Length: 278
Ligand code: AMP
Ligand code: MN
Ligand code: MN
Ligand code: MN
Image (tube, rainbow, N blue to C red; front, side, top):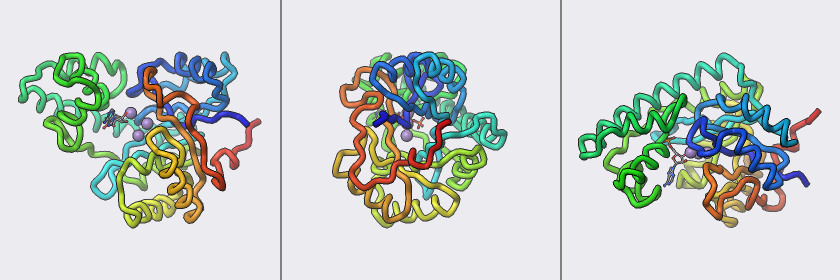
C-alpha cells in the first residue's frame, strides 16, 4: 500500500522547510504520494516538482485556501490543481492582499501593546510570501513576548488574543469554484478543529457539496482516532471522499511527521481511489 500525505506546508507559506527539503524528508519517511498545500499560494510547486522527480516521490499539486464561512475561518484544500489556472491565481492573489492588510493591522496592535517592529521582522521571515499568524507567533517567541507558539496564540494571536484581527477571506463558493475550475478536487481541511456542532458541520458540508466540493480530511494530525471515526461516518453519510494529511509545518513535533499517524478508519472511500496515475 502506498503511503499518502495530502496536506503539508513549506517556506512558501508557514512551513520551515523549503519545498526541496520537504520532499527529501518525505522520501526519507517513506511517503509515496505527497501534496504540497501552502496557505493561499502555489509558488512552491515548481521547486517541489523538480525535487519530487529527483526523489521518486509523486507530487500532487495542492493549495490550502482560507475561507470565511458563517463568521468563522474554514480551510479548503485543493488537490490536483493546475497552478497556471488564471481564476485560481487571481483568487489567491486577492487572499494574499488580505493577508498583507491583516498583517499591518496585527502589527499596529502589537505596537500599541509595546512590541515594536513586528511588521518588518515578520515580512523578512515570510520572504516573498504573505505573512501568516505562524510568522507572528515565531516573532513573539523570539522577542520573548511569549514562552512558546501555543502561548503566542493564546495571549496574542488567537480569537481572544490582544493582537487578534479576524481574517476577511474568500467565500466558500469561490474557493471551491477556483479549485474545480483548475481541475482539482476540493477537500474540507481538519473539520474537527472548527469545533462546530453536528448541525453546523452538516450545513457546511451541504453547501460545500452544492458548490462542487467532494472530499473531507478524516485522518490528520489534529484528529484523534475517535474523531476520525466520527468524520468517517459523516463522510459516508454525505458521499464525501476521505483524505489524509499530516498538516506538517516543521520538524521537531514528535506527533506530526510526514506520512505518519494517518490511518483511515475502516470503510472509508479514499480520495485517491478516484485518481488515475499515468
Ligand atoms: P493564518 O492563516 O495566518 O490565520 O494562520 C493560521 C495558521 O496558524 C494555521 O495554519 C496554523 O499553522 C497556525 N496555528 C493556528 N493556531 C495555532 C496554535 N494554537 N499553535 C500553533 N500554530 C497555530
Ligand atoms: Mn499553517
Ligand atoms: Mn489549516
Ligand atoms: Mn495546513
